[in-house]
Image 1: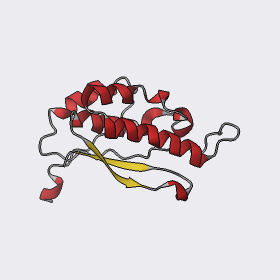
Image 2 (image 1 turned 30 degrees about the vertical axis):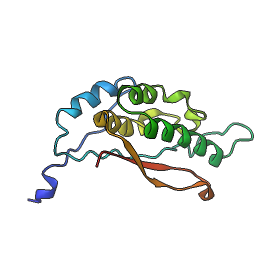
Image 3 (image 1 turned 135 degrees about the vertical axis):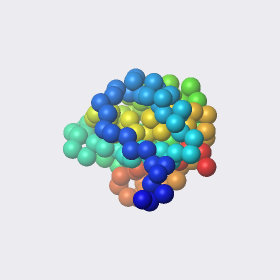
Length: 139
């Protein structure tokens, strides 16, 4: 038995809407002590989405990544949760994420983090043609 895996929590694929996420994240908080939560996904997942005329994938991904970064890096707690639940207000939100299930892992981990500050630990930058970021909450 690998002791390193003893504290890993594996979450099954869930069919939740973004509005259900806060409730689910609150449940996770109670089991979070000593557990590393990993939410996988990308800030852009609209690879096969038809883009609005004159809008490139780089433009859409950069705009929505900026929205997510502002939400995650500048807000904590209930304000961050509210902003994430209203993710569709971000420019090119539905272009970047035609369906929200690719954002739900991020929302669950952010909800479990509560008041912990987010840190951006990965960012492709604009020269790549697709702007994506990854975030860490807590230490």
